[in-house]
Image (cartoon, rainbow, N blue to C red; front, side):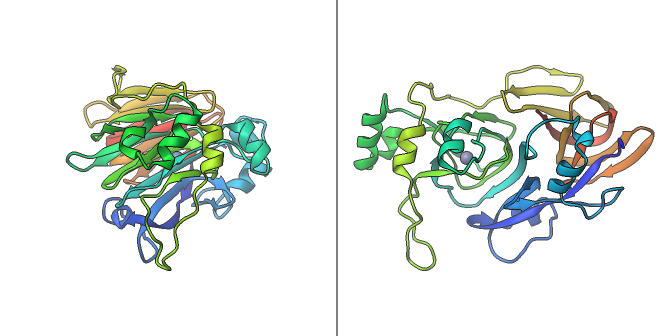
Length: 316
Ligand code: ZN
């Protein structure tokens, strides 16, 4: 019952994507530019299959429906979180997500989308859009109308290891040359504010959602100036954020300093984002190559990590 549940990622081709998920992480990708690896997901747009072990071949959504004890008997009709790796070769559109209440009312009962980014790699001089500068709805609408994007959008320089919490209502975009580990609510609702007037291969523009964006933007939130992580690292563990939907930690393991992490939560998502190693659970050792993702179920107890690697873990 306590064995780790390893998952097979689902890949999504995107115009803004690249090939780094193959080059840097060794995943076997479909042809063309690939932007998103849905690494731990039970969302209908990308439901991950279990690889190996007792639940081999089952979809994560089915495990959630039929074996809720693995997830600490949490309530809810869908697995609540979604873990992705994004390869943004080109800029993503400027976007904003609704909260649960707005999404439930306007998007067929969908969850809203709170998300956060751990920067896996950034190009020299790279940056990211987080937050906006309009004081209210009218000003925002006017700046969009006049195309004053440099005035409206808050750009922040980024470096590897930075972390950004993106609450619903925060305007944001990942820009080209960035690899990101994203932890988010299991939702696919995005309102596009601006797409740089880019044309799709057939010459058309992607749809924008200005009206919905004006509804959901939080005009009171202050835009951040940096994503530098300031929390202290304690025994290899750095706490990155706690929100109403998830909490996220980074774990750094070295050969000299293995890390034991107590899985006391309903379940724990684990992603190997740098290096490689192994984990010992209940006396059994499992290899963890780079790019491995697994769920430690309820009752897994202590996870003993060894090797030389960096992990991002999350729980509700
Ligand atoms: Zn987003």
